[in-house]
Image (cartoon, rainbow, N blue to C red; front, top):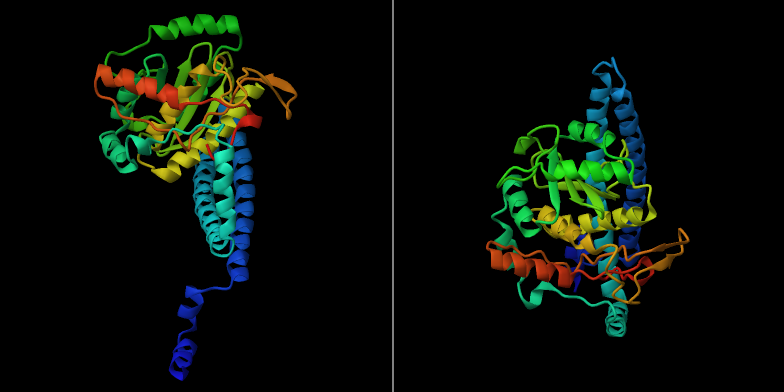
Length: 364
C-alpha cells in the first residue's frame, strides 16, 4: 500500500491522466469552447476584410496592394478555420466522454427515444456496403478530373462548370438577374460542352490544377457553388446554394442567396460539408456532389414526415418546401457501367428523404 502511494506521489501526471476529476475536464472543454468563440469572431472579421479587398480590387486602375491583402487575409482565415475545427472536435470529445462515463443513462434514454421517432427513416450503407468497402471503391478518384468525369456520368441532368477563383468572380457579376435573362443564358450554356470531359468555365479552358470553383447547375431549380482549397485539389472548403436567376458579386461559395429557401439550404449544406470532411476528407467532395444532386427534387418532393410539400417557416413566416436532406445516413456509391449508373441514381434518390426545417432531426 505504501509502495503504491509512493509511486503515485512520484508520478502524479500518470494518475491524473488516467482518472481526471470531471470538473477539470469539463472546465477544459469550456475553455476550448471559449477559444472557439474567439476564432469565430476572427473569421467573421477576416470575411469582412476579404470582401473589402475584393471590392477595392474590382475598381479600375488599382495596384496589387488589394491582391496582397486578399491573399494575406485568405491564409489567415483558413488557419483560423482549421484551428476552430480542431478545438471543436476536442471540446465535443471531452463532453461526450464525460457524459458516457458519469451519465450513461442519457445514452440509453436517447436509444429508447429513437424507436419512438422512427418517422425519420434512415438508410445506412452498412446493410449493403461497409464504410471500408466504400472508401476502397472511391479510392480511384484521386484527381479532380477523374472525379468530375465520373460524377458527370452519374448525374447527366446536372451541368458542371469549373473556374479559377477570379474568373468566377467575373462570371458571377455577369449572371442573369431575371428569369427572362436566365432562359436566354441557359440556352447558350447548354451548347457549351467538351466531349468526355467536365464542362469548363465559360471564360476559357481551365487546367485541372487551377480549378478553384465548381458550379453545379440544375436549370430552373438551383445553382450550387463549391470552393476548393488548394486549387486543383478534391478538398472542398465552402458551398452555397442560389436561385438560377440570381447574379452579382454575392454569388460565391461563402455568400447567401436573397431567397429564404436557398438561405436555409446553404446553412444546412455547410453542416453536411463539415460532416463529410470529418468522416473522410478523401471522399468528401464525391459525397458532397452526390448529396447536392438529391436537391433536384427541392420543389417537388413532399416532406417525409408530415407528407406536405409546403410548410410555414417560423423564422421567416413564409411557406417553404422541404429544404433539409439527411447527410449522416447518406451514401454515395461508385458506378462504372450504364447499369450501375442507373442503379446508383435510383439508390441516391431512394436514400434522399426531404424534411421541412421543423420536421428535421439532427440525427438524420
